[in-house]
Amino acid sequence: MAKGAARGETSQWPEAIFDVLCGAGVTQVAYVPDAGHARLIDLCHADSTMHSVVLTTEEEGVALLAGAWLGGARGVLLMQSSGVGNCINMLSVVAECRFPLLAIVTMRGEWGEFNPWQVPMGQGVAQALGNAGVIVHHVDDAGDVAATVAAASELAFNAFRAVAVSISQRIIGTKVWR
Amino acid sequence: MNTSSPTAAKLDRREAVAQLLAGRGDALLITGLGSTTWDAAAAGDQAENFYVWGGMGGAAMIGLGLALAQPGRRVLVITGDGEMLMGLGAFATIAVQRPKNLAVVVIDNEVYGETGMQYTHTRFGVDLAGVAAAAGFESARTVYTQSDLDILSMALFDAPGPLFADVKVSTERHETVLPPRDGTYLKHRFRAALLGDAENGALAGRKS
Image 1 (tube, one colour):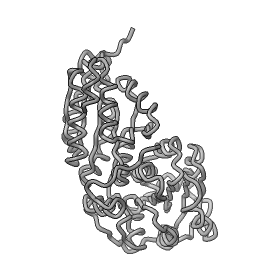
Image 2 (tube, rainbow over the protein chains, first blue to last red):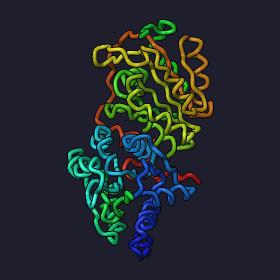
Image 3 (cartoon, each protein chain N blue to C red):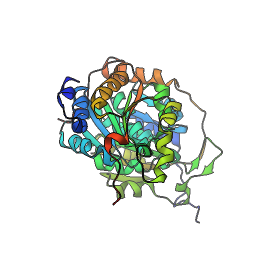
Image 4 (cartoon, rainbow over the protein chains, first blue to last red):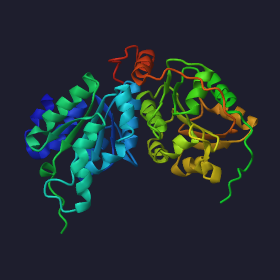
């Protein structure tokens, strides 16, 4: 967490998340790519101590991280808001077994969205995750990202809970369509 | 569409699973929901078995996470054809990671046994070993006969993974043998056996 705070520039929030993940002992990084996560995914791939696992669908990551925990390892799931819906039934495994889950969700379909097709799932993220038993911490200020991921990590791995941090499109920047 | 199998499967699922598990040594086992869980329980319940009673489509991926976390241990996933078909993407994801210690075995009776024996896709010719091979598994085979099964038994815990085998079995049903079903208990039991401490465990799985 201290390392994360040391990355002073708010534009470096992906670097700050990476530092938090390293500090938390995360060794499995499962992801379906999102432009908002591109920098963080690059950092994870560049770290030879982490398994960076590209998924075909987000629910694979929920299952992967359950297996990681069975084996004594910690992981994180990176996805876009549209991936949340893909996870729902697999989250029942997490709830029933009380597996820790740390997910970081970059939002679409909210702040300044241009693509109407992103809106229904984006607007349903908090409710869908809540219904599936996942605690949601929403962040819409870049300066709060690292501390929020650190808090979510504590809640996940020390209190054995499923926690998602949703990062607003306001932080990521809206997609430019020109 | 043709619904006849290349050969009418004669292998018995419960005998096949018992034979495969007989040589497991210290291997860790993940089973998929339904009959493969009853088969594994019939072969002998133990702490190093994690039965996935839900989360259909997730068994192979749970196996991958475990295999990456425990590179020094063999990890075996035994699941059904219906369960595997719900998570076909796992073949691609596992193949990219290339875990040498992971083996995935599908006990393939070509029907959804728990829901009324409806045909699965494999009954119509979908070739799961072909999917695994095309995805890039180190080895992939379909087991039809006792001698095929004997060869698989020898390779299952030693051959470099990721290894895949589709074991064609008859549709004969057996007594349902129920292992423990409380998920949190199964998790704690597994971690206590593997890590010595159910709650904390040692942090495992760094790549280097």
